[in-house]
Length: 164
Ligand SMILES: Cc1cc2nc3c(=O)[nH]c(=O)nc-3n(C[C@H](O)[C@H](O)[C@H](O)COP(=O)(O)O)c2cc1C
Image 1 (cartoon, protein in one colour):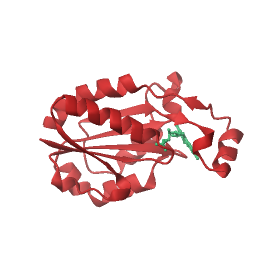
Image 2 (cartoon, rainbow, N blue to C red):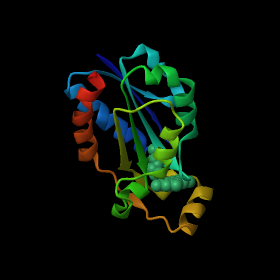
Image 3 (cartoon, rainbow, N blue to C red):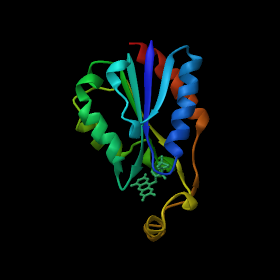
Image 4 (tube, protein in one colour):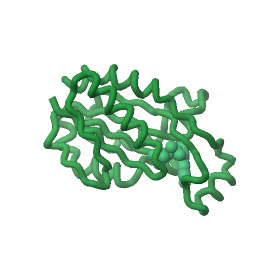
C-alpha cells in the first residue's frame, strides 16, 4: 500500500508538518513517499494521496492548486486527504475552519477522505522583507504555532481511511 505525501510550502512550516505526518503513516506500516510539489510527483503511481499546502493571502499555494487541478482525475480515483498550514488556524475563534481550504476543495471534483487545518508558523526571518511589511501592517500574530502531536494523531486517524 503506497501513499504519496505531497506538500507546497513558502517558509517551511508545511514541510515540517508533512514530515511528521509521513512518520506517523510509516508507523502504521504504510509505504510513504514525501515529495515537494515543486518536483511534480505523479499521483497515479500511488494507491492513496495526501496533499498539504501553506496558506497565503486567503488561498492555498498556487503550485498546489495547479497540481491538484492537473491531476484531478487521478486524485478522484483513489483515497485523497488534504491539510492546510496557516497562521489563522492558531486562532481558536476560527473553530478549525479555513476559507482557503474550502475554496480550494470546492473547485475540485473529489470528496476527500479527511481534511484538516493545522496551525503553522509566522516567522519574520523566514519571509521576504516586502511580505514582512504586509504582515506587520495587518498586525498578524507572529510565532511558532505548530502542534506536531496533533499532526501525528491525525496521521494515525487517516491511515485506515487511506487504505480505503
Ligand atoms: C505573505 C503571507 C500571507 C499570509 N496569508 C495568510 C492568510 O491569508 N491566512 C492565514 O491564515 N495565514 C496566512 N499567512 C500565514 C501562513 O499561512 C503561515 O506562515 C504558514 O506557516 C505558511 O506555511 P509555509 O511555512 O509552509 O509556507 C500568511 C503568511 C505570509 C508570509
